[in-house]
Length: 325
Image 1 (cartoon, rainbow, N blue to C red):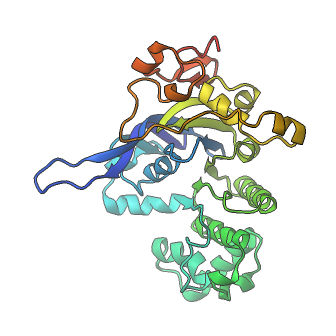
Image 2 (cartoon, rainbow, N blue to C red):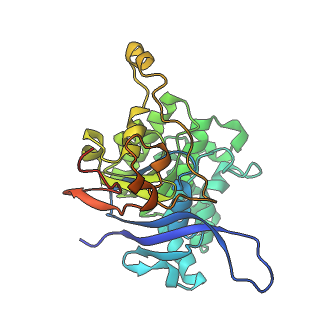
């Protein structure tokens, strides 16, 4: 079966100020990322803050134009489409943002906010049709159609995120990029929103890219997991294989940082977190991106960057010594 989405050797970054006649320059953030995603599946992308997860999500949707590489949507290279054609495709892939309240225009009613994609992609709809479609989208996310007359300041964080989800699904997309959609919510509300996304996935046949630093949430919602460190993919595999035993030292460190429900065990491991911070993107290391913090580092790691390679069937890691660690 052909994948719904295929990302090939994608590089992305942010433009830097330049002189009038100088070549365009970019601050590189995402490096040589590749993966495929089938319809109805969820890819969980995990890593520390600053590892390039959100930049990757925006580059996939061409909200941030990739520096190089390809994003194939149903086999079609989005980078080769004229702007008008790309805009038509945007109804098929949407995004949910981390800060739900800030993502809603405070001057607009919720009904108008939710129906905004229809105004863009289906301009022939009359006001009654827009109202009906907005009411249905609100019902799908667990809100009464009466909410259409409210404003964003009248909502809780969880309700605001439900409105963001309603806006994302109203045009009938096949892919939604979820950019840390529950990180700003209370734990109990996080579970409700994640379960809502899973229910909508089953009901609407959605593919999801779920970006998060919360490994517990990713385990609950994802089919496959990709771990990013300083813009590079360092591990990629199925969910069960990843949580049964990550292969890369960085992925193991992330797993070890998940809070323990047992207070005795949690207290015993305090102070065991990895020292230091991620290297700066302005001065990336020449070798392994995790070398400065890895407990297994040798001189070879500092000079040669390991390629992402299959270690066991269906389980890839970018580590020189993944087989023996």
